[in-house]
Image 1: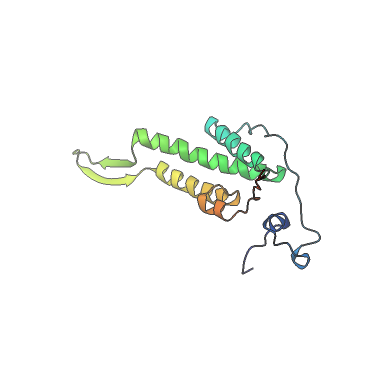
Image 2: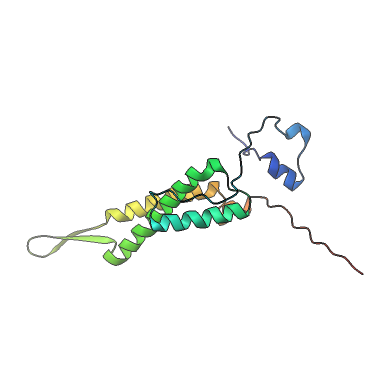
Length: 153
């Protein structure tokens, strides 16, 4: 489907652009979570920390939904894999060097961990956009206006 992606009715109402002809009568709604769920057991410590950080931020913005937890977990798993692989590459280096029997350098190639890190970062970025976790994605999300009470005496 070409064109703009549909905007949820909730965001239309916040922006003041909700018109009855543009509102879906049967729009899917999902339940908010009142608390941060426990991080899944299979996440590493880095992934669990990221899970709690992301869920805290989404909960504070009232954007944490039960149906999103598995995608948040996938994001946290990918970003943890990226961080852990980059940490490993920092200590072991990014290039493998191969020598012949005479001790002469025959070839150099990047380590397989480099591709793993790059793939994990690309996957994490694709998921991050869905939750508004990148600066560009945040700029496209409408937040409710904060109205200040200004009383003059």
